[in-house]
Length: 352
Image (cartoon, rainbow, N blue to C red):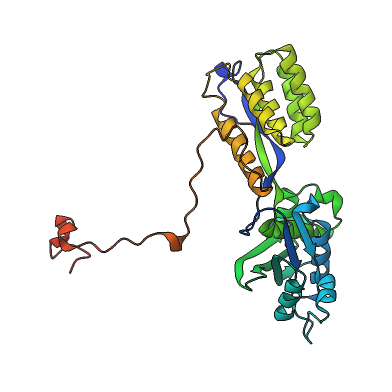
């Protein structure tokens, strides 16, 4: 989205900004780093929906495959030699855990369908004229409660409820409109992707902030590259920006956008080198937000793939680690002498 608040008298040097989609790495929520062996347990709930969700999990399993070795219920039952579902066709957790141990798995992913609204009837075209006066049209949705179990200890270490509807699926995963036909299929595919991101390293869509110049030399090439990036075609965008930088080496926007193109293909050192060329106007200040964003993506990349820090180290200090509520030390109660003087007034609210 173009920022309307760009000042015209600075447009020659700075220009405006717009965003373009980019897929970046994100680490899972399990404590073990690196390659994982994950057993997917039979999913509880409606039989037709759980079978389709299992198919989606297999189809959208994270790549590259060395990051995750997944075993699904059919293989698990063969490993254990026992039935993994009870008489009512619901998962048998103890049998599944035993099979996962026998197969040498690290984690067991258990899911239960909490709520589903799939296979909804199409809207009646005859009633379109009064839709403005009706409640919001219902769309396909799916809610699944997931648990991650450490196979060795048998302890449940993470739980998460994931809800996806068709509107969210189409917004966050526009490419699924071509991969999966029908609203319910897109919801299942998006749910599978989000479910994998809970346990394993995956890529997620984010928005990269591009410079959008208007009046500086080479601006037309930069804007043409931006149009390609907006469509997700970072290779063609990079070609346009490189041409602008070659012809007009002082074009700040071309170099900044080139640094983002390097991030898109996971070449973070090249991204930093290119960004240095953009420090021609307001040196040190104008490119700092981009440098911070690049390092954030690189840290996520290293964490997801279990890579050591880069040889030259990190440019910015390590971010503070999040503190869980149970780790916050409780402060001892204050004595009367430490309390403010007004708390000793008998009529003061909140005092004895």
